[in-house]
Image 1 (cartoon, rainbow, N blue to C red):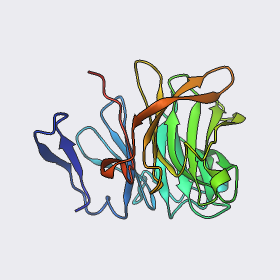
Image 2 (image 1 turned 120 degrees about the horizontal axis):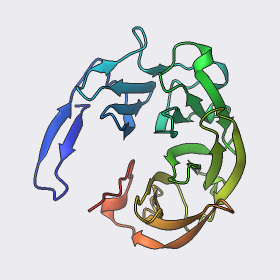
Image 3 (image 1 turned 180 degrees about the vertical axis):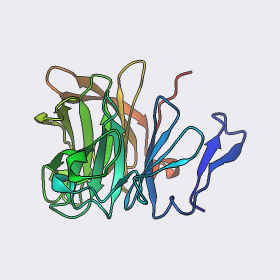
Image 4 (image 1 turned 45 degrees about the vertical axis):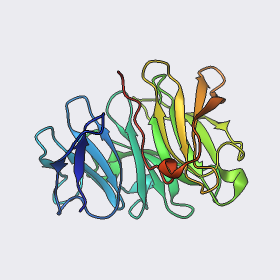
Length: 243
């Protein structure tokens, strides 16, 4: 049953878009549609790519990004999120136990050799697992971290240079367990720049709204968009649609 569906925004219908049993293995975690119509899909063991014609794009016999080495290793058991930089380089989140709870940056052409692992950064705490990646319209990369330890639930801001992939200005942008508990997904409003964050905790499964300050790299909560309900439990991905 692992597949991609097209769903009408008004809920009036659904059609199957893509089925590929050889590629869509493991749990499918997140996806990103690129400007050329192709798709990147994070699954448990790696990242798949499909062209606009639904053809699988591989590196040899492997997935587009499969078992990246160098500082990106070992990222083969829990690829949970991805986004791209302005030049197409892929930022991924891998949520395994320390020290494999990290984000990594891989060449826009995919992973072939260790040279294609361009950068990596471990989580701010050994107890924190990255859950989602969002390249904000400002160019800064936001990463949410969830944990059973209250103090390790947070969102961090990173400056990742698209050219050199140097990771700098690592900043704890928000961490208040009363608001942010088990963050599971993030999305940006393309018009306002507001950042929406879904909480996955059974006691705090809401969607919160934040303003991102580009100078301080801090998130300021502006309110709750959707309160806890049966419809907001275990949100794995969100998209803010332009009307």
